[in-house]
Structures are given as C-alpha cells and as structure tokens.
Amino acid sequence: YLMNKIKVAILGIVHQKGIDFLRQKDFEVFEVKNFEPEYLKEKLEFVDGILLRTSKLDKNILKNCSKLKIISRHGVGYDNVDADYLNQKKIALGITSKSNAVSVAEHVMTFFMYLTKNLSTSDKLVRDGNFKKKSELPDFFELYEKKVLIFGFGRIGKEVAKRCHGFGMKVYVYDPFLDNSVIEEHNCIPTGKKEGLSLADYITIHLPLNEETRNFISKTEFNVMKKNSIVINTSRGGIINEIDLYQALNEKMIKSAGIDVFESEPPDPNHPFFKLDNILLTPHNAALTLECRMRMSQEAAENIYFYLKEKNKLNYENLVNKNYL
Image (cartoon, rainbow, N blue to C red; front, side, top):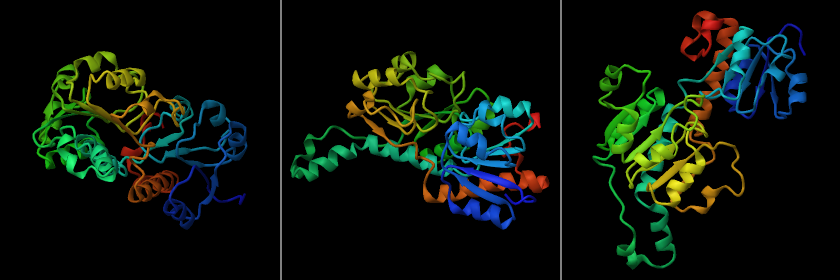
C-alpha cells in the first residue's frame, strides 16, 4: 500500500469508467473478486472506501475495517450491508439513485410486451413450420387502455409510469409514503393496496426489501387479482412469496409473471418456476444495460470521491444514512 493515498476497494465487477475516475482523482484503487469473509476481513482492514456490488458485508467483516468511512452501493438496494452497524459507527452508506431508473423501467415494459403478446408461442409456431396455424394461437392483447398498478413511486416507478402513459395505459399507484398530490402531478391515480390489486391488469413492484415488504404479495393478494393479470418483480426477491406465486401461476389464478429477482440468488436448479410456461425469468439484470452499468459505476465512484474529498459537491440524496453521520 502507498501510505498517503486514499484506498478504495471495488467488490465485484463494475464498468471501468468508475475505476478510472477514482484513479484520475489520485485514489489507490484495487479490485476484490474473492468474497470469503476471512479474505475480506484481511483485504479491507485499511480501506477508506468500498464500492460494492452484491456481495454481503455483515458486522463480522465491517468491524475489522478500521479506517472505513463510506460504502457506496452500485445500485439502490442495500440489503446486503449491515446498515445498523454503519449508522452506529457513523460510516456513510451511498447508493446510485440516479442511474438505473430508465434501464429497469424499460425491462418492465419488455416483460409487459413479451407476456402480453405471447411472443415465445408465436416464435415457436413459425419455427415449427406452422405459420398458417396462427389462428390457433391463444389470444393476445393490447396495452392500450389497460390498467397498471405501480407499487412504490420513486424514480423507477415514475419512469415506468411515463412509459405506460406512452402506451395509453391507465396508471394507478400505491405508495403510502407519498402525498397523493405527488402521484396526481404525474397523471397517475392514487389507490389502496387491495383496491388497486382488484382492478389491475398489470402489477409492477418497485419497493425496497425490508420487514414491512417481505411477502408483500402472497396468497391473500393473489386471491384478489384478476385472472388475466400479469405480475412483474424487478425490485427484490422475497417481496413476492415464491411458493404462493408458483401456485397462483400453476392454478391459473393469474395470467403470467415476469421475475428478475429471487429469494435466493441464483435460484435452486430445481426451482418450481422452471416447470411453468407462464413465467418469464431474467437473472437480476434489469439494471445491467451497458449504459446503466457505466452510469452506476461512475455515480458510485463519485459518491466516494465527493464524500471523502469535496463534501460540498455531494449529492445528499445518494446518502442513505445522512441523519447518523
């Protein structure tokens, strides 16, 4: 280690843009690709900052980081960090709040389109030489004038709403932490949870995972939904109860689902979802377009730079725990 430089560890693979930015600012930057707790304890002992992808940093590892001042998450969720410990030790926790909204919103719309238009069935029909049997395909639909329910109206929820409006959809929002006027300003209709579920053709979730939101959608909620509804989760696994979702899809209580996130990642090789043909699965990559990876890497790096060197330029919206610092 060079004695006088600020040291930053990059945990996980990020776009080179953020790494180059920190090096240009004269930080000593090194990448860590082994996430075993004992290895991390040793490697992170003298770092000032950590740019973190998805590996877990619990109290056991963090209490060994004697010089740590900030962890900057490459993303917006931080359920892989012991936030209570950071608050207690006055260590900053940053997120990349501006980077991923467009990318995730586009992923949601892709799920909507793919599942609504039965694209996989149509593609198979053509490949199997059954082009002329198109009238035998199951019904497919328009998004136009359909009702969509958005759970959580932060940056991503707002970007989803904007795109839904572009398709001429009716947009309902449930967000108990927001004043209804904010929802109405975006030409959306505030609604209650149960009421929204009972009228929605499409349901998309943009909530953090915590004790209040775990199993936010389970059997009770599936019982209220329309039979033709499509449920999308690009937020966190665990917000939808996976066993209940499997049953709802298997018993055709709802039409289909698009799932980017799982309770356990990667999912078990024998996961019941894999037996269903009315679910579309992606590997927690809604926010991983090239443009988004570049933005997240840069924004996560800037959080570290501004916090450690130029507090006056820091985007305080990106600091999760500013009240504790």
